Image (cartoon, rainbow, N blue to C red; front, top):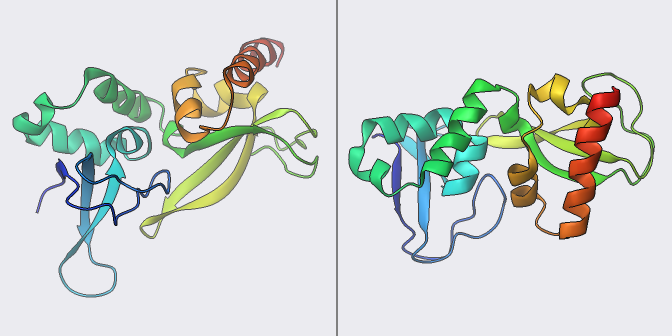
Amino acid sequence: MPHTIELAPSARAKCRGCDQKLAKGELRFGERLPNAFGEGEMTLWFHLQCAAYKRPEPFLEMLLGDDRASEGVASDLRSAAELGITHRRLPRLSGAERAPTGRAKCRSCHELIDKDTWRIALVFFEEYRFQPSGFVHAACAREYFGTIDLIDRVRHFSPDLSAAELDDFKRALETETDDA
């Protein structure tokens, strides 16, 4: 069966992208994959925005194959998914935070990430789930991702960040990227 967009019939499923509940009646994206544990297929459920950000290929595949579903999806989600395909590492982004310690190494430059500096968390999609895979300096974002158009994704995957913190992160991206 092809991938799908449908209304959630209950509030039991969790989004694979952000690990939050899918509300009853909310539109959700279902990525159909071969069942890893037996015969048949299994469906991984995502919020539409999480699917556009984290699983752009199957999300766009579904949109291109289903004009009816394509009509109900905002153009900004389509653009976000296309950006994720253009910049192949962008779907790995899983939020931003200030480094609580100075022990983690950047996956781009391999230098330590200083305590209290902005870092971007990364995940890899392996074996039907997202696995934590390290961090990148804000200064290395352009080199690692190929873009610094990250604010919407960071806002989505780091909902606890205040507007002031997001502004600070944006300045760190722009300033540190220019200095790097």
